[in-house]
Amino acid sequence: MLSDYFPLLIFVVVIVGFGVVAIVVPGFIGGHRPNAAADLAYESGIVPREGARRRFSVSFYLTAMLFIIFDVEAIFIYPWAVILKSLRWFGVAEMGVFVAILLVALIYIWAKGALEWGD
Amino acid sequence: MIDLSAVHIDYQTVLPELVVTGTIVVVLLLDLVVPPDRRRWLAVVSVVGLAIALIASIPLWGQHRSAFADTMAGDSFAAFFNVLLLAVTILTVLISPRYLRCVHLDFGEYYALVLSAAAGMMLLAAATSLMTIFLGIELLSLALYVLCSFSRLQEHSQESGLKYLLLGGFATGFLLYGMALIYGATGSTTLLGIRAFVTSSPGTNVLLLLGIGFLSVGLAFKASAAPFHMWTPDVYEGAPTIVTTFMSVATKAAAFAAVGRIFVATLPSLEAQWYVPLALIAVLSMSIGNVVAITQSNLKRLLAYSGIAHAGFIFLGILPGTTDGLAASLFYIAAYAAMNFGAFAVVTALDAKGEHADELTYWTGLFYRRPFLATTMTIFMLSLAGIPPTVGFFAKLFVFQALVTAHLWIPLIVGILTTVISLYYYLRVIVVMVTVPEGAPVEREGVGLPMTVVVGLSALGTTVMGLVPQVFGWALQATRF
Image 1 (cartoon, each protein chain N blue to C red):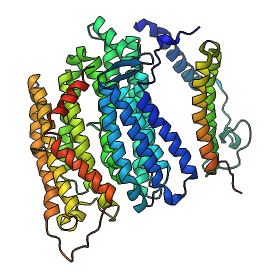
Image 2: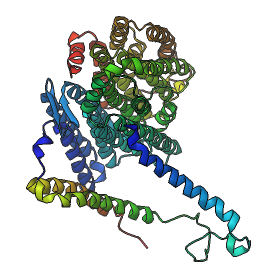
Image 3: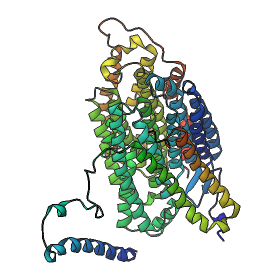
Image 4: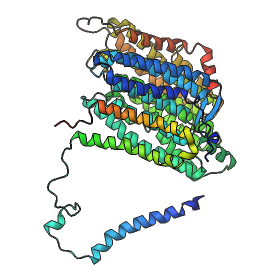
């Protein structure tokens, strides 16, 4: 039983090993030229303009939550779609209930004004 | 072609849960159209839905259904807990509208969240698979995290919700890790499969024992048993009192339903291995709860520590690993539900009026201001202390009896000693209430009909439940898996 987990052990060793190598080795073989630009936070090559710790509009979080609602829906619908043919009408009805409940969530947040960005 | 008959889809097994879930949807949508001054209709709709679910639970009594690929059970055990949890939820919803209006928290979401928590608890009580157990725990926890911080403008309430969320998330991590290990060791997520594995391959399985250990940490956290109790006083104190009333009783009951199903119904053959850690949890809970409660000057904190102690007493019935012992635990849970709900309901009734009603000083001379509330509170305190003929006495008696039958002397001795200690702080509340107050008498005020009925019903249950022998018979019947 435990031997089934051997690939997992290799996986863990590779992960830890890669991390250690990637951090330790450049210290030996990489050049070292300290300057102001090198100390900046790396933002995909764009020069950062200000600190990241500022307050975000609450709409930002609401949008994130909305995204989760529909993302979860999609996650469940993919496997369902694959076996829909063998589930027949039973599958359609069950997914209908699931989507209807998520729809209630959408109606609720819509009516509560979460989709209004108020400017 | 997928063979659906092997999955065994059986809607009657989950009908109570379905009804509650449907009520959540209805209440959520109604909240959008009901004007703010008619919000008590949401409470009415909730109560109707819960009552229908309660009626739908009764046909499950005496059955041995196993549905949805053995992940849900429709049996007497589920019916017992469904009725208990739904009754507690109905009583909570009944006293909610007045309290919520008094503390300016009259929002429709409250009812949807209470119903969600109730649905999660019922799911947990009927769950016979690690996956459904997890689902139930998460559903009830997520709703309770929000409910704890429901008083949005009060820092205390925010602190309560955040603490519960962070520590609860941590405990869930343990729970999930334990489940993963158990699955790794047994190759099954259903309790039936795990039981089959355990009986067919005896001998020490380290992976399985480790998994069971982590799983117990998660469950003991939800049941607020020591040493995983640290969050309890802070969360109970900060949360709106009505929420504390609900969660202190219902969450504990639901968590013990899962404990009963896992340890007594699934793993009785491993009793020798899980006895010591569980006995430790029980002994620690009783000692810490009862000793620390002595120093509390805040009634919500006092009842929180008393709740930790009672979690320890409920664990005592699990220790023998027999269904008879579990029946004693079930009876204790029912007794605890009646007396603890009543005690917290009295705090709620006072909290709706006073600023610092949960401080013990506020209770000085309550007998002269609120004779009814003070009298019922006396009954609850006597019962929590375990004084005959209240139900609290019989609950302790049955649990101790189970320990005697199983010859488990050490937990028994600790149980009896800590019961004696607990007398001090329960009786102190009564003494405070009869003390003649200084200064001018405060005028009497009513608490409303729903509160009077609910507190009265709890007091009635606390006094007569122990005298009706059928109740223990039901607990026995519920544990015939």
